[in-house]
Image (cartoon, rainbow, N blue to C red; front, top):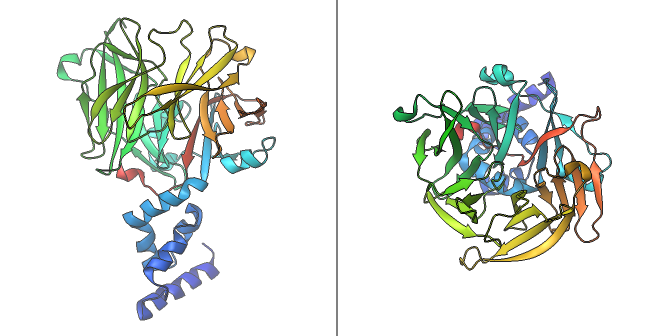
Length: 393
């Protein structure tokens, strides 16, 4: 901070102590500050004891989170090795000028967490919730929670295996779930783990859940008949639940719903009684509804189906639209939905290694330039700028 700004802040702080400033009522002050971006609020915390206390309070952080949906960003992780393989971009930048999005470099906060030294060059960004990004160390099989906006990081405890299974090796799969139980103010991570013997023979699958209250992992019961598909979790929680695509031993296709408040598992039917021949399926949260995207039988387009009647448990599915399939993406998993416009017409999607903007009415599709040196995108996720600290996890 330069000397002139420091003097202003010191003067403001002295005024606070003498007269209890600012003169604005707390309600009005909150109404003003809660609309500001995180970067500005971080600076303002040093200008007044009262402002610092207000901006750091849980109530203010919650109110600010409700306002921050307009300040949504995308995080892009390239397939290269190096400290410059992570970038961020405002969704509005892509929406307003798809040909020239304003990507900025994002530095992992190495100094804040030594464990990142070992995972700097190979890590995965899995999911986001309330501005927090779940980071997975591929080498160490550990998870970290990171807020890229305020540059704070917190390690989750190692996932414990039951004593009877200590001789086995736990292999994490990219079917992780990450959500917030608003009723109990509890962040939860659900990790399906495939267990194998030391000679890598598959044995069984267990499901572990981390809860920020009491900051510990525990095993949850999922019937053996369900087999969750790798990389099939819905990126955002919906109706207070996490969701995965699953199939049973008799090839019955279903959706598993895990209610975060009750820690209960439910089965939701899909439009298919049997597993399709081309099982390139993913779950989306589209226009506030649970949706499925999958390749058609010919492998020429992806079809998107939307669900209604979720809360009433009167499930029905209807066809929504198709997405073009690039030749290079044939037989790759269905695309991820990164963002869509408020009217659902424009979609920002990720194919196997690049982003594209799709107009669902006209069918027009255009690729989005990301890394100017030609690097491919290994993973992209949507997140919002927030004040939520990973220490809450």
